[in-house]
Length: 168
Image 1 (cartoon, rainbow, N blue to C red):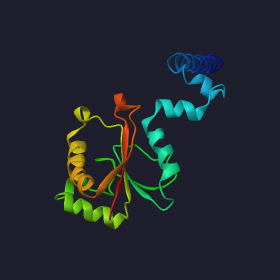
Image 2: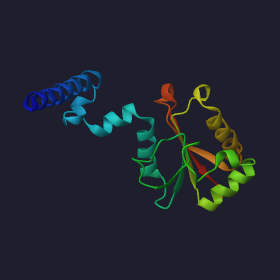
Image 3: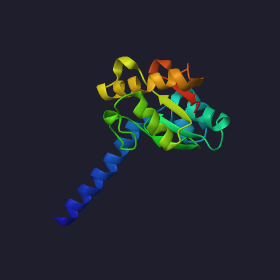
């Protein structure tokens, strides 16, 4: 009986793994040649990811000592600059809800040494209230002291990405 249970468990693992691989190969088939090294990873990521395109541009153009605030971005995996993850509701470095207005946010950005802001993958009509509130706090600062230096127009259907330089 123990042998039968063990055999069934092994069969489930093998079949489950096979199904997972078949499922992945079918639904992610456009990625398979990249994973196998048959297609260029960099070119594929540039074409498919606004965050990768923005990070690649930032790595090429921002000063080495830049400090980037990531807003509506889930991480800075590709970014080779110091960054502060500030996704509204998912971190505690920038307390968006506690900000009394743009002036308190401006002070916090100075405390953190933020020189640039990367806003990624955002479509205003699909944002949650907390995310809209964060952008409403940030927009006057960008209008007063910011300069847009990168705008990914290739991925605008998924929100794109924008990088702003802040003048101190």
